[in-house]
Structure formats: structure tokens, C-alpha cells
Amino acid sequence: MSIDKLPAPLDALDRKDQVHRTLARGETLFVQDNATTGLFFLVSGTIDLKRTTKSGHDVIIHRARSGDTFAEASLFSDKYHCTAIAAREALAIECSRSAILQLLTTDIDFTLTMASRFASQIQDGRRRVELLSIRAADERIIAALNDGLLIDDITSFAEAIGLAPETVYRTLAKLNKQGVVSKSARGQFQLRSG
Image (cartoon, rainbow, N blue to C red; front, top):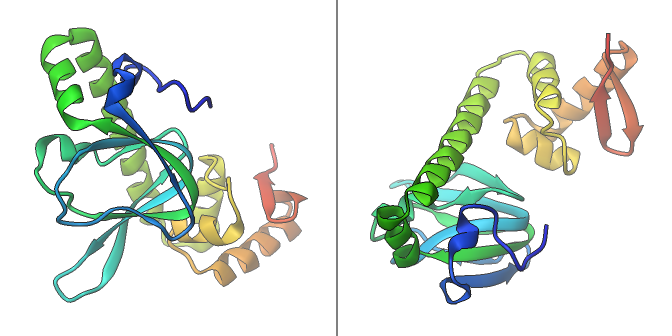
């Protein structure tokens, strides 16, 4: 994806309303309770959104991947409700809060396309919740492979589906032996058809 052009409808933003941010792994994009400046489009990489509980525990509430927008709530909140940290090297484009709010109130096509984008991401999030509710590791892994979630390494895949990496490695080996999946490359598996 070109870093010079945002996807619709964010491509309606002026260049002055976009800030390109390159992050190294572990670098923080924004911090919980800091003032909001806008939402973000992730061009490449992975960003973990973490919320710190009152007892001091960090909980990953969302993992943004290439092509996602995130921090959408910042459009209607004065403070970020979580911290965004690069789980791997990332390029994100910050989209000005005031510019987006202006377009939402003046451009119906922009508003409808943004609403559609947000609805699609909500559906994806609900599918992830459904996936995490599958108790059996082999069934969860099969469902996650079917959803195309094995795009990085096995450790990231395991984290995304709420299983220990050792459990995922062991289960994939078992599923490969049973002929349910096939190993296409190191750390890459796919469901066998039929």
C-alpha cells in the first residue's frame, strides 16, 4: 500500500491533516489518558492497544494490523482510553480529529463510507470474540486459519487467538499429522481442502 494515499474516505483529508509516524518495535504511539489528536490508519506493521487496569495490569484490547484504522473513539473523547505500542515495526498515519469531524458534519459520502468502515471493523472484532470463545484448541486454530489470521509468525498468531505458543505449535503438528492442515513453509500452515 502506498504511504502517499490514504484509503477512502480518509483520502479526502488534506495533506496538512495527516502525520506519518514510523515506529520501531516497542515504541509508543500514544498513551492512555493523554489528550486525543485523531485516529490512525495503519499502513504496515502491528499496533497493540493496551489498557492499564486500576490494579496496574496491562490488557491488550485490540491488535491493529495493516489496513486497519484505530483509536476511532478519539474522535468523540478528549483522552485516549488506551496506550498504542508497536508490536512490530509500523507505519501509521495520524488523521486530524478536527478535520475528520468537519468532514463528518459536511460530507454525507464521507460520513457513510466512514460508518461502513467502522461497521466492518466492529464485525471483525465480534468475530474475534466468537473465535476466542471456542474452547478446544484444535477447533479454535482451525477457525482462525479459516479466517486467515496466520499472517505473521506462530507466536503472534497464538497471541491473537488467545493460546500459548507451545499449544499452537503442538496442535498444528497434530493437525498436520492428521491431514487437516498442511505446512507450506516454516511457521506457515493452511487448511487442506476437502
